Picture 1 (tube, rainbow, N blue to C red):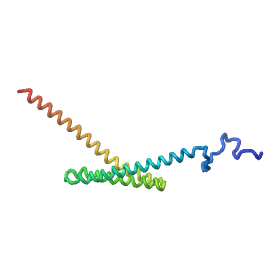
Picture 2: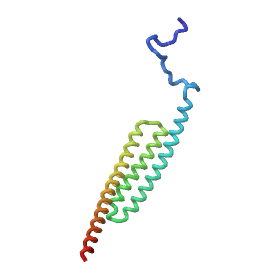
Picture 3: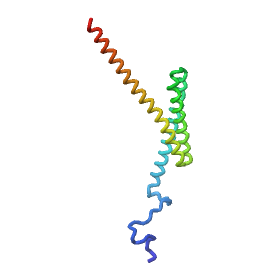
Picture 4: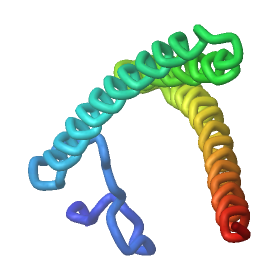
Length: 147
């Protein structure tokens, strides 16, 4: 009876202990994946910071004109949101705090909403431009065909 395992005979498998380090149980792959995740997070936060600063600079340049400020100000806000997302991603990597992920996705959501609105406006203006060009071409062909 002393050689019996510590689990009841009703259980089909022994309990899993996760805090023991055994070189044969795949901890090496976990550490390797963790290293890869940290390097990806570093790269992602760096590129997010770069794009955020770029967006802020382009937004500031766009704000030089009075009418174009309607485009520049939202660009500045989206760049600031992306910079903040980069900072919270770095904080998540350093402190592994799950609450910073909520902030990260909130800032990222703000950035993508603003950029999505720009895309929708750009598509609408492109369709109007193409329609205007087609109407102009049709009218010019119709006008010159009557001569």
